[in-house]
Length: 125
Image (cartoon, rainbow, N blue to C red; front, side, top):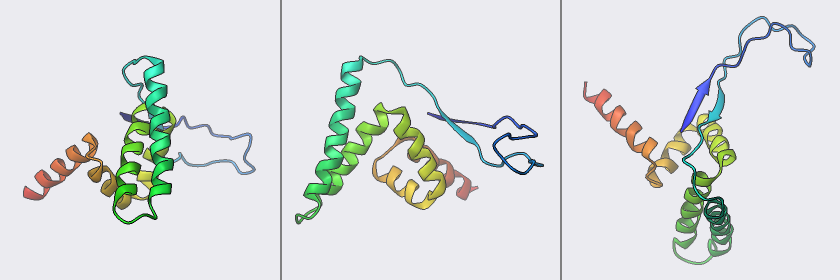
């Protein structure tokens, strides 16, 4: 679950040459902790996800869609087990919303299904 928080406004940033006169418009992304699982299981799934992503690059030149399925499976495992990866994924989706929503739909993520249902209901009204 990704939560957004407003950054605290500080009138002067010591690392900046110019004095800031407005509040930042970007949201800082914080990732909510996932339910506790055994660390060995989590690290094992994370390692398997990384191996699947690397395997997708090896299998991709072969005929057939095998690389896409390996990559999607690896992404699912990595996103479920790494807070850093979830944060980077949220930033990527914010920067490229069309690509992010397409990939979320293909991976059948819960957030994409809820967003799709909400957009469908809004279009019906």
